[in-house]
Image 1 (tube, rainbow, N blue to C red):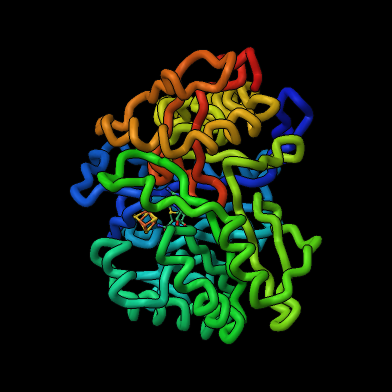
Image 2 (image 1 turned 180 degrees about the vertical axis):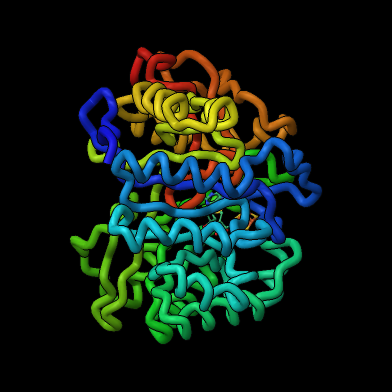
Length: 383
Ligand SMILES: C[S@@+](CC[C@H](N)C(=O)[O-])C[C@H]1O[C@@H](n2cnc3c(N)ncnc32)[C@H](O)[C@@H]1O
Ligand code: SF4
């Protein structure tokens, strides 16, 4: 192994999330606009470039690789990439190769993924009501996703369901979702919805804080705190009656910066060292600039050196409380560009806030969708 990837604060990076594409066959109301303009294909890394890039990280000590998107399974040739990357599992260089998916293509790919050494898969499932599913995804067929989840289980993949908490919908269905997960033996994580990108929807109507759901669950079931950690941002509780685990992912109010071991690379090859900061390093130029990896490794080091100590959870929390106001203003801005808090800005804060779209940045898993703040340096007057 080459020299391990340490940031300026001594944290070792062992987890890479790699976005294969910004494209998707669904248009979830909290994620994308109905009429999406996707990136021109030439902007995306080729699958060979993705392999080379992931391998460069693995050579530097990355032990867990999560493939995500957009929807990773809509990318042509995706199984070939998994097959190729599985050599790192066989060699022992990688502990885990996994993915986050909407499940629409799982039925046809589950067995091939399992054959590539994938053991676990995160599947997004916000509702078990077919009509609501179509409305939330603006086009999806619930039966197809449920068949995908069943195929994953049949192929021996462990499934974690991710449900974005949405006002009205999740409150009405939380016990159905819990029951489904318990019956099928799947874990379930609930995620607070975040104002990522421009979805063309009224986000104020969508937002549902997780403490509301937690209280709702606790009104009927006994929730015990769980020490379980998945290496991600979820806090777990165990349901005494069923023994199942529920993950609560509250990206606005909590962070785990001190132990952060992860970085993200977008489908265009931008390295994002921290979710709470929009700073990124271009790896594509280095990849395309030379067939040797020396330049690429230098670019990775430069990206890592920019990994900040952490992001401002208290600032985020403050922003969280101002959600409604932000969203109202957000609705006035359709370009997804920098967002000025104006009067809503936390006391002492300067600069702009930018909210990106999850798929753009490969910020693609539970809790990884976040407000990308302009950075601690821009907020000297901590709130
Ligand atoms: C961006 S998707 C990419 C992978 C795949 N297409 C999927 O849906 O699982 C990854 C995760 O981000 C979540 N997500 C997307 N937009 C979000 C938002 N605005 N707030 C919270 N979670 C979001 C999705 O529910 C999904 O679990
Ligand atoms: S959340 Fe996933 S499935 Fe839904 S639109 Fe975004 S990328 Fe597609």
